[in-house]
Every structure is written in structure tokens, then in C-alpha cells.
Amino acid sequence: MSDSIKLHYTEAGQGTPLILLHGFPLSSQIWQEQQRQLSDQCRVITPDLRGHGKSPAPDGVYSMASMADDVFALMDALGIDKAAIAGHSMGGYVALAGYHRHPKRFAALGLVASQAAADNEEARQNRYKLIDKVKAQGNEVVPEAMMPRLFGARSSGDPLVEQVRKIMLGTSATSITGSLQGMAAREDFTEMLPRIGVPFLVVAGVDDKIVAVEKAKNVAAAVKGSTFVSIEGAGHMPMLEQPEAVTNALRTLLSPR
Ligand code: MLT
Image (tube, rainbow, N blue to C red; front, top):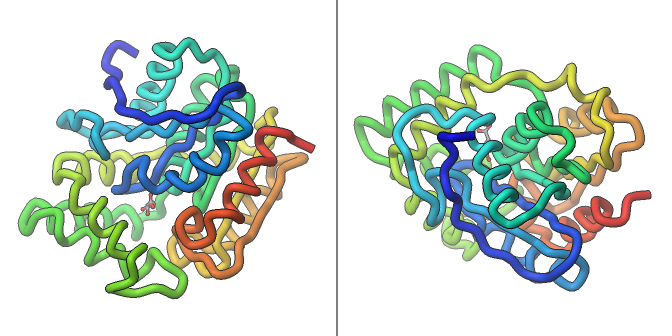
């Protein structure tokens, strides 16, 4: 873990640690409501993954494993041996890569609008095209490309859409290209799913245009004893679109059935 990056994070509450990882190219800000609502029950830690929010943005490929190592280094620094760790979309890829490396550091594992499969060739090529566009035109092209697919039923001008656009525009081109390369090269963890031995939660927005609800359901079905929560009135950003429903789902990681 010698190359790990010291992550910026916020925390609230006490007791059992719950770590919430954001997606691409976002920041810990997306979890503000859940952090506030869950801090009555546990210690909620929301890091900015490398290159995002207020964390440093090194050059190079941001592999999911390196981002997971950053999170483990943060846990070490905070004296946390084991935590419930849940990730949104890319944050879910990071959580799965982390579980693959160090399952003993997980008290529970959650995926929110995320999946276990790697990119297919088309998805990979789309990421490389976006990298070329970012290099030519700057990071403004990213919200342009992503925004129409992020929310279930919200469009430009909606405060949530504008909040997310602002976070994206604050993410540097270095971080965007590093993350896109890392996601394109990520491992497929479908085969690992039946071996997950901690409480496992999958949350899906019914109107998610990036990770279809059926795909998320299949991920949950592959893990014995998992909890699957589908959320009406939400797309790929359920923690912002239906914050309480996501908070309630995350509570199942803290007091598993
Ligand atoms: C995310 O929300 O983190 C990304 O859309 C994930 C992806 O592009 O696969």
C-alpha cells in the first residue's frame, strides 16, 4: 500500500464504522444526507476517492484496487480494523475490488446503483472516446455526456442536477482520465459474488439508465442471504433522488437480518 494516497474525508457519529464511497466523477458530497441521517446510529465516514473532491489527484491509471488501498490506508490511519463499506457505482467497483483483496476488513458490503461485471468492449471503447474528448476539449464534456443518463426524472435547472454538474466540473481532467482508464480495465467480480461472506446489500434505482435494475437484482441474487432494495422515483443517483429510502436500506448493513 506504499503508493496509497492520503484521502480527504468527513465523518459524523460514533460507534460502528460505515464507509460510503462515491461514484464517478463525484465526491463525498453526494452522501451528505445519508451521513446526517445515519450519524444517530453509527460512525459515518465519507472519503473523497483519489482525484475527487478534496483528495489529491495523482497522474496515471486509477485502478479500482489502488483506490481500495487508499480506503484501507484511511481505515488504518483512523484505527479501524473492519467497517461496513458501501459504494455508489464506481465506488461499488472499488468496494468489490477491496473485498477481493482484503475481505477481513469488511463487516458488511453494499452496492448502490453498481454492478459486479467488467465493461464489455463497447463500454470500454466509449470510455476511451470520452478520454480523447476530455483531452481535446476539457472536462466540461463529462457532465454533457453523463447528465442525461444520471437522473430518473430531472433535467437541467433542477437543483440536484446542478449540484451534481458542479461537483463534476470540479473534478480535474487528470482524475477523469485516470478513473475512466481504471474502470475500463477493471476486473469482473461476478464469480466472486457467491463467496461473499458478509451481510450484502444491493440498492437500485428503478429508472437507472446506467446500471439496469435487472442487472443489480442479479448481483443480489448471486449472494446468499443478500438484501435487494429497488427504489421507485430514482435513477442512477438514488441517494440524492430518494435520500431516506437509501438511508433506510443502508441501515440493514448495520443491523443485518
Ligand atoms: C459512476 O456513476 O460511477 C459511473 O457512471 C460508473 C460507470 O461509468 O461505470
